[in-house]
Figure 1 (cartoon, rainbow, N blue to C red):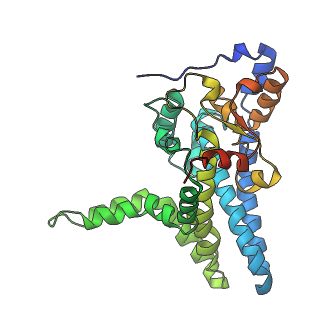
Figure 2: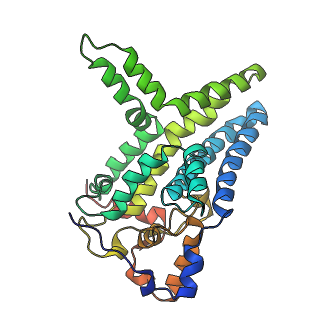
Length: 314
């Protein structure tokens, strides 16, 4: 099996430069996670307390912001998968399992294969980038499916209903439902607790509108855009480790609703996968100062990347 080529940090950084880049802070990762949940809470609060006429603006804005921070929470779980969220591995894994999207160990086992075989035939994520470039019409259809909840349904729920529909005549239903409830226990507990806490105050709409809708619409779309920016139009079996992933320059709006917590520095992440996300901008600046950016795969922005990803003629 073709293992992707790796980068030796010594090729770019002196020991005194590399040490602070690779150091895991005891508070920075936790502070970013607290920031994500506080932004979600603040967006919900603003949408709730707004008068009805202002909700026409604050609710859609909250959906975008909350969906962006839902991605942010997942990104910080991704850092935990690299043992980069906290220097104490037990704390790192507990936080990654219980205060983010969960499923840390399974995700870690899967995701590290992506790094080991980045853009090689054995890369488990290769199918996500392989179709590009595509036509603009094709991308528009995909985004429409994202924003209408079709992608969410397919990824999260359709498999369960197919499993129920295709079970053998003598196969009992209860074990299937029990396994499905257990697999989705975090989702269901969050739903029940939130609705029970808010419904008595006439705010039972918070969970379906300000949590489920962002999760089912905005989050799938920006996750798609993020993945396109990171790996689309990268050659299969690419030998150059500086071309396994792409760094995309993000403006303040993109960082707020599409690319939170430095996820846009993806080339640097693949080059040095154990560097915490909050140190990636510093790594980028050092690499730029050393003249390395010209050898790396970069894009000036998300719109530029989408133009490249939709360059196929209709």
